[in-house]
Image (tube, rainbow, N blue to C red; front, top):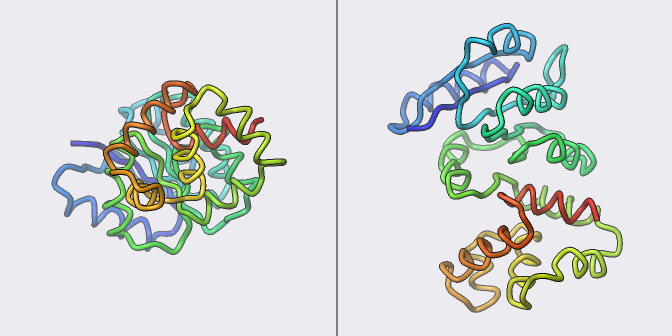
Length: 209
């Protein structure tokens, strides 16, 4: 059983997520607020959830600032941004502040919950178009990529390169002609060698260079 929190001012979207939580056997709703102010008033009595979905365009304290507040309070929580803003600088700022995922609206609520397994397996909920925008932010990508991944094997670099394009494990498997199990093993090794815990941290580490 995992716990989930929501900070979203769109009443319709928030209620849809709440209703879907009630239909998923192994997920329970920890809290639901329409603003960061309402959340911060109660944070001292809340238990740390597994996932927090937070909108960036909140009234008052923004979701961007909210990521910082949440990360300072809870170290292990998985913060997933839900927004219609696909500006690459905003995406990167969210990741630097501690976000583990970035989903663009509109999206299907069912898909949102289907993808929770990605977080459970140590991945990040980042749509392919967001991953591509982040990758385009890298200056001189070949030099930067080689610098950051110098400790990796050639095949591990191939996997990372495809991962940064926004491909799924299955798509990487097809592109490189290897099994999804092998892809998963390579990614685990990459995380260990580069001292990161998720795809979002991997992206941030490369972009910082």
